[in-house]
Amino acid sequence: MSSLMVCCLLLIFGLLCEGREVLVGGKSSTWKVPESTDETLNHWSERTRFKIGDTLLWKYNAENDSVMQVREKDYERCDRSEPIRGYKDGHTKIELKRSGPFYFISGEHGHCQRGEKLRVVVLSPNHNRTNAAAPAPAHAHAPADGHANAHITNKGNSYRLNGSWSLVATACLVLLPLGLFGFVQL
Image (cartoon, rainbow, N blue to C red; front, side, top):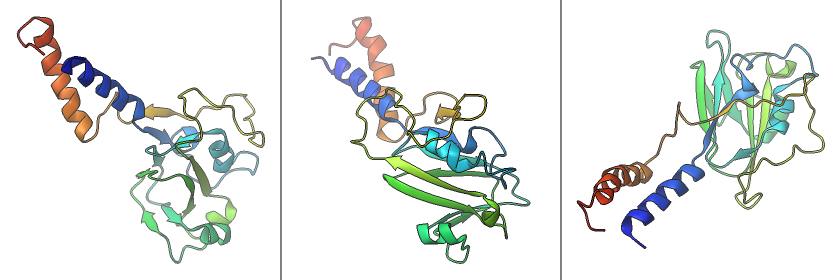
């Protein structure tokens, strides 16, 4: 197999394995005290499949809100005293680097108690070996309009490569045209 073919296969593999950027709640400004208990962020989270490498993106008003990553016991109690991490920038990004549950609450007094909190479960790499969309869990609640939009995009406006994948992509882009025109013997 030629070096060029190997290079292109590695590039394709890298693109398929890249995480996604997931807008929390599916749209801007959903990180707030919910208007009702019928549609909380946890209902949205139950309908959305998260994998290792995905990045959660919160868009909120930083003047009157914040995001705290907490432990399960602090999530259940809405305890803001010992967060794992806290964010107050209005455009918070958190990469999901492992499988299992992640817990988030609002850092503003009283918001968590009124329902502004989120539990996200990241699937293990062995959960579903295909990229096909899996059905929603049986206990998930469908929204009133019947759509389960998660507003999931590849990180950035188009494919964005990280680390060594950037080097592989550059090599492919340089070697492919040279190999096609016979300038380089691979």
